[in-house]
Length: 326
Image (cartoon, rainbow, N blue to C red; front, side):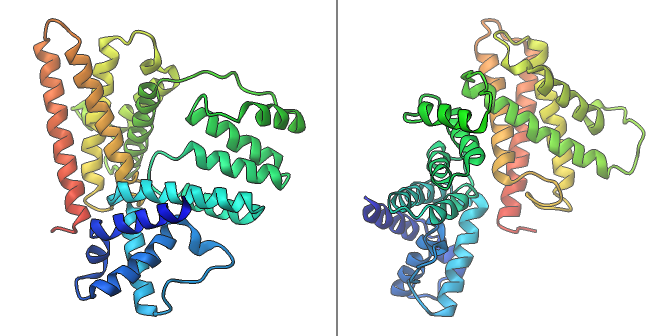
């Protein structure tokens, strides 16, 4: 299974064109395949284990593979990221069965840095490796995170209970949180980071007449929404939905200004993946709210349309930065 998954990732790498995108087209087909093989080991974590035999000893090709890895880990190739996590997880499981627990942890640590939602299985494997090394507190934290990310994941309840007794930890009450609520909170947290960063850079401390440009006040409003869990209530008021949209629009304005001087994942700005996920979820939330109302509210429809335009403009800006366009 590990060998088949390795060949699968290599094939996906070659068809994705990431090697050419990162390193240029001067390489022959054979050289690109070698670079792709080295890239496979950089992505699945195999290159991090103590006993590792590189695909190539050619310094130029290894450098090309590292450039391609950096491009993948920037989040521009989400399918390759997902496949890398899948293959790396199989590798980590193999290391666990071989009782190479420290090596297993090295690989899982690498996998958790790959862009994406994060794999419950990776946390589970790392948790069991830490359990084997008698790192009980860390093991418990990992297994709880695995259960939180995928409630119902088999094989967790008994070791969690045992670790809780060993560490004398009171287990939190298990409450399953809907994906929509989790995504909504993640959006608000991203908006909060953007707004506070923009407020900190503002040269004019006075409140602007347009509240959408009052980034500090909007940041405080976002914090209040997070604390009160308004998006997690059984019934969300339309006023809360409007506030969510306005905070998103204010964050978009703030972010467009920040991106004139910095790039995503720099100077307090969230990553491209976090930005797209936050604004994408907010837009889906608004459109969904609009669709369940039998009678369309013209004012709300205009708000949804305005937010759509704001997200489109932001996506265009992110694409400019992706391709380094002037």
